[in-house]
Length: 217
Image (cartoon, rainbow, N blue to C red; front, side, top):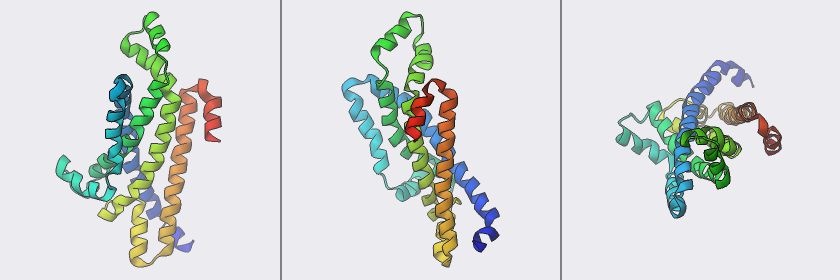
C-alpha cells in the first residue's frame, strides 16, 4: 500500500494514458460497425461470409499486429495511433456481429411502416431502426469496451505507456505492488466505463430502462 500511495500520481497518469488509447478505439469500432452491420443485415446469404471475415480480425495475435500495422499505415511501432488502429480492428471484429444482430431484430414490418408514414431511408434508419436496435448495440458496445481496456495493456510491451506499464515495470524490477496496482486499476477502469455506458444507455433510451436494468443485474 505504501508503494501505491507513493506512486499514486504516476498510476493516475497511466490511467489517463490508458483511457486515451482505449476510448477512441471503442468509439471508432462502434461507428464503423454500424454500416458494416447494416450492410450484413441486407445481404441475405452473404451475411455470414461478411461477418465471418470481419470476425477473423480477432484471431490475429495482438502483439504481431502492433508490430506489422505500422508498415501498413505509416506510423511508428510506439505511436499511439498504431495502438488505437489495432484496437479498433479487434473491437470491430466483436461489434460487427452485434450490430448485424441488432438490426436484424428490427422487423421488416416496422421498416415498411416507417416508410409508409413518410420517413426517408435515412430518416427511418435514424429515428426508427437505430433506436429499436439500441439495446442490442449497447450490449455489444459494453463487451467491446471491456475487451479493449483489457487489451490496451499489451501495448506496454512495445513501450507505449498505459496501465500495462505497471505490469512490465513490476516484472522487470520485481515490484509486486506495481503488478497488483496494474491489475486492479485495469479492472476498475473497465467497470467504471461499463457503468458509464449503462448510464448513457438509460439516458438516451429512457423507454428501455427496465430492460437495461435487468441486463445489468
